[in-house]
Image: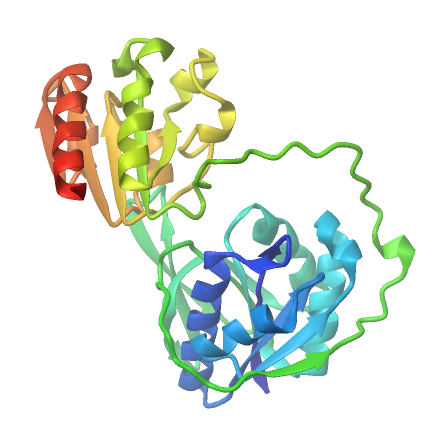
Length: 322
């Protein structure tokens, strides 16, 4: 029996979310009285694989097959299912991101396992297995009972944190018997964004809404983000107007994020937007309308024009940095 964690990598390097998953999986394994095993798909060197041991992973199944770089959901699900069977895993943990949300249902069917998406924290009980998740766009916490022998969980980003628990990780080559027909996906073109912090990885996010008046004023958002080492985001009306790329749209119909610190400049706080950012640890809102819904969700609020407040915050951030 074990807990299996799927650790994603990008170009052979593990993402921060993989270390959070490893930390969560190790804590869950301790709670269950078993071991935490990771499965890595694709070309990752041994030094990188060994990093997982720092977060409590006792064994890493390494599937060194470069075809997994295509991120084919069907192939990934088959490989993880084979790893789960090999290790007699009773719980399989993935990230609650686009890849995890695509793979987890397939995996659930293959393993005849119960599935809980966007889980938060360790289960409150093991028998029965009860895990919590945010429901109703962040307004409530749901407690889900799982009665299947095998369970599949996707873990909400930044809901557990990264916790070091150094152990010696044994690296073991694993062959899930993949064939070319398992990789049905073909990639004709790849466009990469460089020089920007990914929203899914950002500890701090600086976002703007229609209160920014237009795309010509976005320089201040980008400047503050650069000073703070933050990602940039926007509300849906901003991306719909073409002021910012759709990849920056956060909300219920965009990207769901959970940074440690979220700045909302000129964002009114529609329920769809709050549904995508409500898991942020701290929300700071700036809006000239004192009745704006964003203030109900904010930990700190400033009633004022975002275009006048931003320069002051930029200067304060520069002083703090210096």
